[in-house]
Image (cartoon, rainbow, N blue to C red; front, side, top):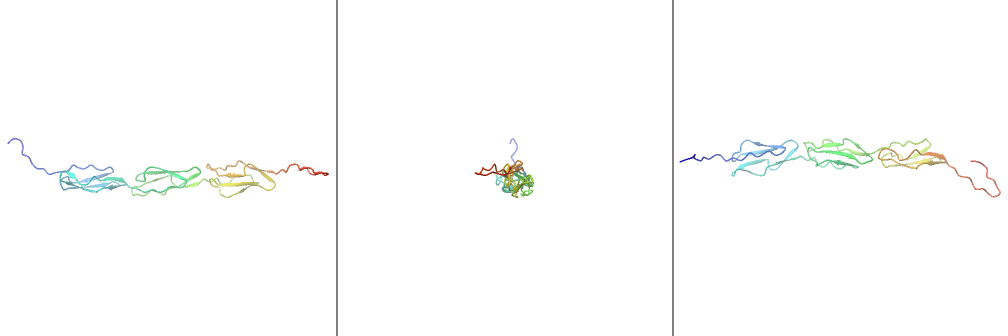
Length: 202
């Protein structure tokens, strides 16, 4: 005979590759052996965690994959918007408020490996214009000094307001009025009466 006599060797499966963000625990690749899939923190296994080497040098089941843990939708913020990707580890959401509103709290929240957000979402509060600055003889009606609210300006009887009587709290935190003043009311010259005189000069 020429050549070498054939021999039988144990059937083996190829070592399966590790999934992204995880690994495969391989102790043996011979027929009947098993491998176990595990994910790193912040990821969860999708698929069967254990595969077995069967005849034909094949592993049972499809290879498992590691998916990022979901933190869930934290919900919308009134008068604000959130910017970011999916609500999964390790995504970060960035918040900003609409014009006329200011952020209360952190402007970012991060999805943690345990599937929870690292803090509370912020809120958007109306800008405050504070009490309006007017001259002492100008009367202010209204006590809500936040964005889009109006106050009414007026004068004492016998005086007229020079300027707008309504002022609105604006998005930049300022009032829309421009230094109104009170001036004495003038009645104008009275009409003459027949066979009589008008006395007085004011």
